Image (cartoon, rainbow over all chains, first blue to last red; front, side, top):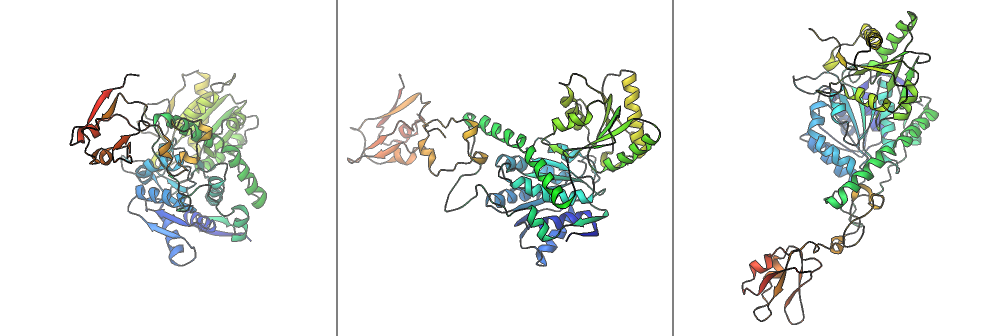
Length: 391
Length: 97
């Protein structure tokens, strides 16, 4: 039976990885991811998890090791953050191109400089185009559930792609929450043993990762693009089955009090919970405001997103990363692209907030909702504002 | 994967663009963009095998008489054999067709 316990979210993620019965963990510690891999190394050292824990000398080596073990047919996990992910990025592109179902937790943290260990979504956006499936957790329970979901999706024979589970550094990783930890039997029902479709095997030699000449590179990338686009139904199916088994249902795009809402906030990650409280306040004040939360960032769920925002007059998109010198934050750019072909488009303003752990309060969300209404009324040319910046 | 060219639909690629058949590079025609071809003067050839050793594409094989003969399916016309031949038996001639 599942047990509801007070546990640090990082440790709950480690427990999920243990329950997934991984074969290999190769990781390098980096704040705020450290507790996850520290606990996993303890679980292995104490004999609670029968896996190889490989303490590598860098994140570049961590991902390289993961590629090797995954290619050998082992269920493989790693975790990182920010600068660490930047260092492993070269190999992240290779992992997805080689169709290796590695699961990675990214404890989201800002990128230097200035040097910062605090939470925002710069690292998530840096890895936006790596070809990894990316989900985003809002709270500790989701971090646990999405980790199991990640293995299930990654290893599905219709997918075979690596998956990143994003969770906000400190805001989630370092807090203690009541989390329902599933037991081994329950997890085993949801997550079958990994059956590699192709693996490094001396009896049946294959070359994984050969050079792709101009004659074949385009076809290889086309196949990869089709694979990640085709993953969405499996991602949704795996969430549906998770809900049927354990009672917690997840969707690519979640809505909160959007019925009849003229103004919508769009968020990702843990700040969505603050935004929900802000929506409650605004609804109590008679404002028609709702919230749309993006849980699946890659592949981007265009149809589900359009359905969620249909009918709204204006949308305030909150980004937790700057798209330096672009059209706005990365999420806003995605949202604008999603809506471009719609015959009736809502007005969009982009707010960049919560950089490097800067608080985003209920008042800030009210400011965003009021701000987008005012900008729409004044028909300002669509742009973006950095919230809370000191002039 | 199509023999000789390696040109193939994206749908027919193996998972992750892997090469699933060992030794399949022998099927690839590497000799299709040659502008010069090596021609051996067997009057001068001393059967030393330097062309066989230095060829980067395994073009040369020895026949029953001990002479090394090139397989134009693989020859890219790089000219290394002609350069290395100690007897100056190999000359590079323009591909005319």
